[in-house]
Image 1 (tube, rainbow, N blue to C red):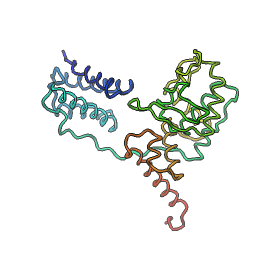
Image 2: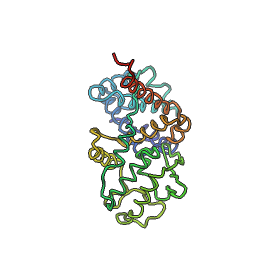
Image 3: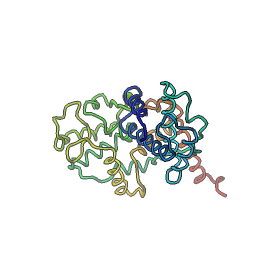
Image 4: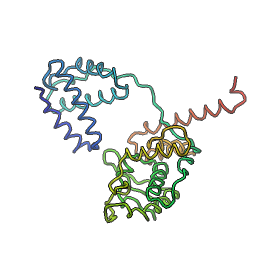
Length: 300
């Protein structure tokens, strides 16, 4: 029988010290469970006897039906786990040492144009509908403040200060940041809050969830994504729109409007400026496309 006891202290460390989200913890747990199954198939009964060759063969087996990005994430999990085992004296070596990850192309964020964003925000909804007002507020907040969808769904009523035009956001690693709200976001939020009590199953206290579903419970990220897809269809965009596309659009349009990268980094809650710098490539790509389409010397 496989001894997976070394996994539990690692996951506890991620939860209590690193403060990973429940979603991230589940991903780590799944990745390690897959690796444990692979080790068992190779006659190994513990993580403590895993080798670099085990890792390579595991990734090779997964490569048949997993994308490179997924393989890279799973290798990252194993590297973190191996470093944890070594740091705490459970192994003398790093069993991932020398294992190369898959080659990943530079993936640029997919952003909407300003016209597409306006079409999505202006999609026809019933003005008197509670859900319509909620969805309008969601679109305005995702695009107007650049929130991650998990951050949006995690908001409490007390996190929004409409008179101050700010929202307090709890991001990755439980880091809190303050981001501004635009006038359209504020108007949409006021309209939603006047009807929220009609479907919420609570007293509307400051710690209660801001966005609720039709049954009165906290709205999920999956529901937000599904509703955005529906709105994109109604707006005639001809493509699926993810919540993250609105966050990308927020950053790309700020950059195009002259905002500096450091300021955008703070608004997005990026730990590294390198992550924010991806948007310079998006802006350059769009500028080249405009040049190719419009400049008389560009066409051959």
